[in-house]
Image (cartoon, rainbow, N blue to C red):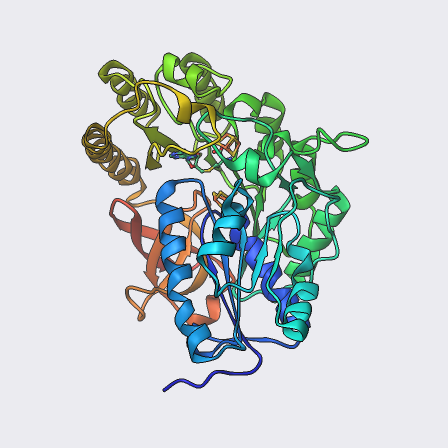
Length: 447
Ligand code: SAH
Ligand code: SF4
Ligand code: F3S
């Protein structure tokens, strides 16, 4: 039987990279308080769930998990069980947890995760349940704990919130308005990560292209990229997510001038039909998107492009869907993340008529997946025989005798090599390609 450690903590994280970054902060707070990470919830004295609610499926999974955690409370009533993050910010959710999940001690939202230490302290001393979810964002908290990073890659949040109100999306309601961090704080964070051995950072925000517009004086995202590009010993910079409507020519130019910025852009299109894009409140149409892609490809011929798509948005006709397939054929993304539309209460799309049946959504999803998988493989085929720059990450999970790393286009490469190259950039000649992986052999020289 596993033994519960008095100072063990365990965090479940759902959702996007921004949530993963938040969980790193939660872990940092717990470390400052003297807690230690354990590998299983059975060993933990504090168990937290950091939640997502972007789709209903996430929410159901989380509530299921939350219910299961009752067994830890039963085994040891002193265990502290907490839940925080996006799902909890929805109206009525904290009440639901209060009444239906009585084993939960601690509920906090996206705007007050920095209060975790005080909340845990109070909980320990008084044994009372603490439910504190703020309705709106406060100041940006820069005094987050130093985090300990494992590996050579790290995420850095550059802005919080979203102002776009796409009609299907819950994020603006649970994450609040757009707020940018000061460039000096971002640069300082990246510098400290580099000192810990990080070689690649991904700058995070729901819409990084509108970074800095709210600062005094305003600064553009392209300027921020150039600042981060100056950091010594940092090898690579990536960023996500980009919103097509704000991806302006100055950013394309900034990417060409900052050599550490990788030729890789995640540019969610969501749909290929003008009617659907309009109903989604995306702020661009198909012609604009296709034109943007051709401008990007002109400036960055080797760029790898990925996207997000929503299938079965209310009112999506067969014709609309055919427009999405057609757009995929035209753009030829390297990869696409496809989601079935999920009705989120409180968003305008949830109230729209003509909701699409699950069966139709699933049929369309299968068609789209088949097409995109074919395109992804075809996009990789010309890479055979090329020598690519790979930042080595470590042993391959599926094949531990080999090493794995990523190309500048963020494609996974599996190859034979020495462990002492971890954290370095090596040249790999691509011998074979699959839909999601490239296989190759080490070349001697750095490209
Ligand atoms: N800010 C980013 C990411 C938002 S969430 C962006 O604008 O792209 C990540 C993805 O989840 C979105 O791109 C969208 O494709 C998907 N998504 C958001 N709300 C959804 C919903 N209600 N149903 C299905 N997918 C959704
Ligand atoms: Fe949601 Fe749209 Fe904001 Fe992305 S840009 S987080 S999809 S509202
Ligand atoms: Fe989910 Fe919140 Fe991210 S709703 S996708 S965890 S911003």
